[in-house]
Length: 469
Image (cartoon, helix red, strand yellow):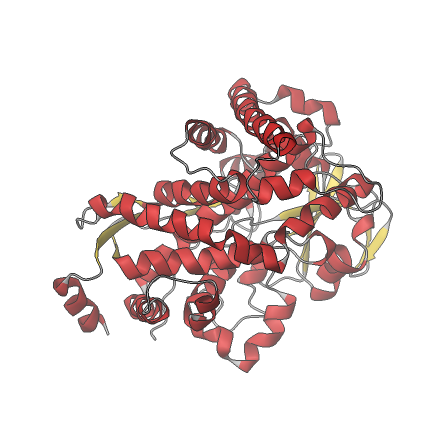
């Protein structure tokens, strides 16, 4: 396999003024980061009224996320940026409230439940193949929009047993697409220690879109509560979560609390999955030999009919492709924590209230961990030398107590949908359309990802693939 280096955003100059840094940050988080972060263990950035520490050293990452997470809660910066949509949900909450939320949510994503929701994922995959078939003409297609619709369909089918074509589901999807375009993960306000009530000064378009989404989600959760009361609710994720009581207190989510959680499932389960799937398809379009291997695995795994939960284990290379894509393009590029007591990191005194930035993006491309860190190489995951960086520098789903509840869900979803799409279609890059990664709510392409699709069974495409080999 040749050394294929997919696009990476340009780093900023090493020395810039605070004003230049803020302007770059406003444009895109990646544009504001210097190249040295890909090899440094730690870097300090001075902001008005506080300090920010970018941490890559394994021992420090482990301390923040695994060993002492209560002392490093999620930063109020993230909470302020997303409050209008997510309320007090599990993605932004801290302390005992967060722990109670996880006790109620986690059982819905345990191993046995993944098998239960698999048919819903499969149904969404078939619907996507049918939806994309008219576009398989060899003409450029913006693929992020398509993966967004597919990921949203998976969420609605697994959560509420309804497809994306349902009017309420369609309304949530369309409004969330508008929200994603208006709300960055962090904004220039991140350079200042602002009080919690500052979220009231979000731009009007963001607040209005959040209100529309929450109103639609409230209708869905209210309808489901009525079905649960009547004994007619389907056995899906929403029913499981709404009927689960905290084993310590016996409390269940209220209606408003459930809206908070569903908003987060949509953010975490739709937005991140859409990002991951789009970038993975782009990587396979760049690497035709890898794409053919995925197609071959998919054909073999579904040779006796359709894909099954059991047969996912027959696609190890497809899983490695998805893991490698998450290393290069982790959907959530950075996590921000805030220390509650004074710390000493690498002989530097870290004052209370400092921002501790942990970056799956930079860890996944860190020069001290990975061989050829910017190269797309799915086979690296089968080599012994990858075991250490996989333990210390691979955190697309975070790690420790706050590891993503849906990590297992995401890996099943990613492998299945990737296999279904590549089995049905051959993907190619569009000449002159190189996507530039940009960090917004997730890692998306600044101007979209354009690919061409043709039916996998097309003899001409098969011959072209063999030539590429």
